Image (cartoon, rainbow, N blue to C red):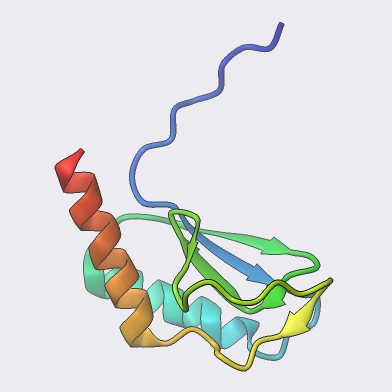
Length: 99
């Protein structure tokens, strides 16, 4: 029987990228800057693999909306934006306040 892991609270931010993605660094900087601006103390969890790259998820939701599924890694044409990232963080903070 497995022991229960620690409970995760707060906003979860993930950066998904494909190996060698030329836009990953810009997305990393965007996520860090928006988190600082929003005042949320969340850390960014980075995952490198076969993803639509780069993708930023806030509480499991793509900040750019739900993209069409792709098979394997692919460059995104709709890279994450500051406005969408801040809106996603504000929605997450609002939802957390209601919980």
